[in-house]
Image (cartoon, rainbow, N blue to C red):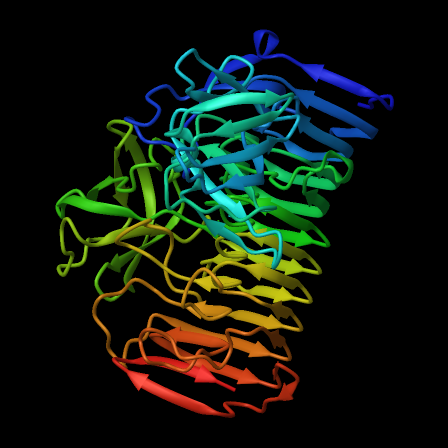
Length: 530
């Protein structure tokens, strides 16, 4: 299938509508309807290649722009994808007067031409789109001087202030005393509700994106869910260069949930996300009841934004995990699965249940649906959060990437059975040949942070293992400073980890050898500084 070069517009009125549960999107309260408005649906295909020849697909309203479902060996390449009115709004401070002598203070802003608004008779300004308006705003501010992407209350102040249009795209707000904006900084505002995703890759075998430019995505970005063998090669998740925009996604850029086989992200670029550019994880379900006689477990999705997924299949290998220690203590195969509700599922195992299950605490992890991961040659910048989140027990390589100005850890290895319920221990991670520049300005994390959520710390039973941080370059003013916890800011923070090698790294131009520098120990927590 091919497109001729040019612009193609897609409207929600002509879109396919399908009820689909998608990981990490919205709760029953946030968004009761799971209807996805799908602009382009590829379903049940085998060996399909879509070549855009540089065409631009422009989507109107709120849509899941492309959905690939139940297909094999599908390739999308040479496409530009954008929104007529992006879900994120952008406005720049251009003027400020503190007031005085009977004159109220005011702040002037310039709205980006792609960010639409309306002002009512009472001077209340609303951010509007094609059939929608921003109801639950979240604001991140781009510092024009240092390029940092920081959390901001700027829009909260402006939205509470009387507004008047003083020119096309120019608005004056009667801001309160004490509010002093930074002229030149840009506010980016999006809605917290993830009612759609950018692109959905669900239950496929062999999906490839090549030479695609994705310039904005509503809600969560490209979501790969229960798919095998996914390759993203030269996928640029960035605003169009000529657009002047700074925001390209309302949340993550690439989200891999419950995938298997080989996940590869190669030579891609990420700029302008309101959340993490890459997140790779599974989903732990809590054990709420057990019947040893029938080898049956009743499980529940715990995080409010993840539920309703087909999380288990007959034949899957699963692990039972103690939530407090995050130790996998028993393995089995799934014989059968029965869906009880959107939140609960029953699975029958092929072996007897262990006696030490802790109900309403322990979780089940699907070991079959865990991928090998290669993240190589990419460029990450302009995100207030992390660069890469990674939790998979299979071999992972994060190599030859540049992480520029990530607000938090550039690489976070977590593992969680308490908050997000995203996966468990890692066993083979290589972080090598990367360059980390001015990271962690929004937090006291280290550029590489290994921080599982276990509440019981036991040196004999660490959570993670076999992690190598070798041959990387670390630069930035934060390195070497003292944090609020009293530790010297380190290049690596590791909790509950064995077989951790830190070798041959360079920090601010200084060579570092294996375990060179100071190690501090506290409750089986290691802070490493070169």
